[in-house]
Length: 304
Image 1 (cartoon, rainbow, N blue to C red):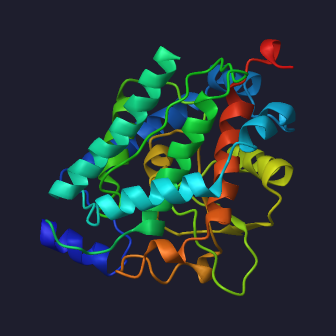
Image 2: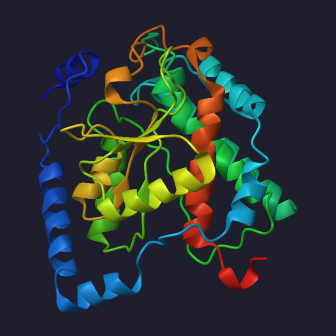
């Protein structure tokens, strides 16, 4: 496929995978090999010794972190991100600059902890500035919580080129699979800031190309820490970056902001602006992100 053909599909909201270079075929083969490995007796035994929690274990710590959440923080960071970079296409100058901005934000956090096409296509406040800022702010809140002492490595990823075939997440997941790197769980935060007027806020769990056990664990977290109704939908195709991890043989999950029938009508348009964002809903997904990290990584020996 040519770049123009790919862009045309993306602009028409047609789900697709571009396998022109054969990379998706290679990743699917790696994923099948990983699944076959898990089917062995040794693989089954390993899975049985490391299940996901069935109950929330660290409510005091999680609620201590989520108490720090301020919708003003979410709004300030999202406004800064969207207003600085109105075109974040992966192959544009502003797209590269937006990646640099996120990297700079994370690098500044790290240093603080150590020290103690230039065409306006869409502002992308919800899709997917909201998810970008949700996990960035979650990281900020976690890093100012000394009681959080993880026993597993935690990685926060921001991917480029999701709209044109999940190229960023494909590249990362493929490298992990080729190196046979272990990944305990992956959660995708894409769109987190829209509630259709007149509807009840929900967390909509995407059921296809995700891990059933991990989804059950997330529903436990939602009931314990978020308190919103859970709904279920199927995309019927690889609708976000969780797909790259799932087909690479890793357990992935994708909680979404609305039922699919109530999706943001402003996405992929110039109407996807800050004034359409429900920051309370973004805070809900920030709570979920924090709970997910703490409950899967906290050292029980150091918890009060």
